[in-house]
Amino acid sequence: MVRVEQLMTRELACVEFTQAVSVAANLMRIRKIGSLLVTRGEELVGIVTESDIVRKVVAFHFPSEYIQVGDIMSSPIVSIDESESIFEAAGIMRAAHTRHLVVGNESHVFGMLSVRDLLAPVAKDEL
Image 1 (tube, rainbow, N blue to C red):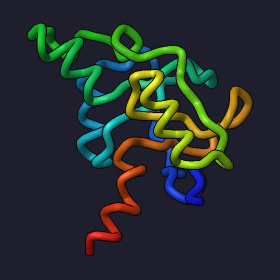
Image 2: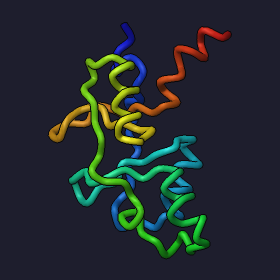
Image 3: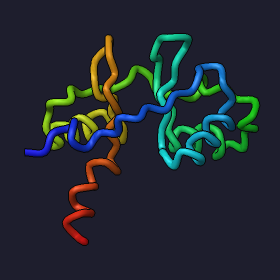
Image 4: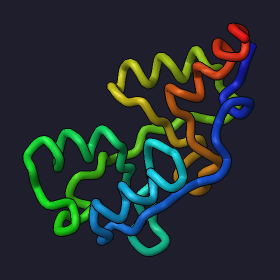
């Protein structure tokens, strides 16, 4: 059984709650990722995704340099334990209507798991 810890991304990318959406979008572009954890100081308060930016900013032609990440982020964060199976992760994503899970708990975040990560074993099988 494949576990979350085997597929999760361990390098976490964060953006401050007060940063402009344009800053977050540029960071995602540079890092080639689809989401950022949102912090307020040392506290993890949400997640912002490419989808949030498209649906809540771009679709309404809002100027992304004047909208703060905290205004469009998703919160609370949906999480999963690193020892859970990827089938459990997929079920949580489906039930929560999300494509990203924080791996860990309130006191410690170990990584992130995305739908893209769940597809990695399938992609390797196809090669």
